[in-house]
Length: 314
Ligand code: SF4
Image 1 (spheres, rainbow, N blue to C red):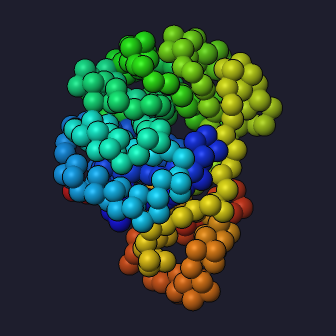
Image 2: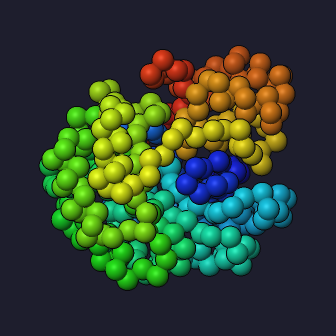
Image 3: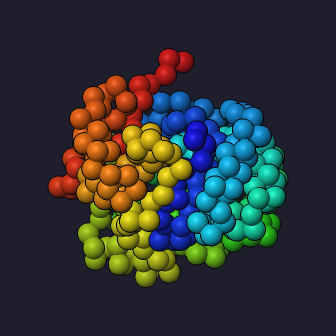
């Protein structure tokens, strides 16, 4: 399947069926911590990258095959920024006809200043925007946005949206050592978060290989300080024991997952053995990984596998 992936276990959402409406690494940010690597398709223009019917059909096929009981939520999430897709409301409308399960949008929140985007995403139950920066300088350092995006406008957009949205806002902060984990930075973030007044705040840390070297997890004591100051919950490492894929082919299944979630070697082995068999494991480890755009890398003493793509010519 091209657009539907998982079911992926999520500590915040339970078992999440993912829907990706945009091409790989299409984004208007190039965050230093991005687990998908540097942005190869940097754009701030919204587009119907695929017909909505094609995306809805895949979701329909999944629900028919595995049933609604196989997932807790449907999450629209990009291999980049999903609100670059338009008309996103056509997708939500189509999915609403398939299931009553909650519909969640994971977004960097950058386009919520745009009235059309706000209208199109108003049908979600939960919107999960990101806020890692507190001013223009920190925004440029951490999120490295498309040149025309300003912090002021993006932040104002999230605040305005949160005031009118009928669903819940669950805000996520990626905490990075020496970038936004100082006491001053955290106090500034607290002020910003209070203006958004989200239903929940989550603190995440870069547990998977980041796009840039030097991106590190803050000290435990600092994460705890931030958690208390921001009245947040912290996201712990995810378990992959409940991964499910609708792909019959094990290699395709792994690629579909690592396009969105790089996997540690242990998690990958566990997934292949529980969902497929030893032969699939052997096949995976004898692949010429470059041919399949798979990169093997080490991070914090663990080996990870992630999907890479060469930068597109512009
Ligand atoms: S973390 Fe999200 S917003 Fe940042 S570059 Fe990656 S896909 Fe884009």
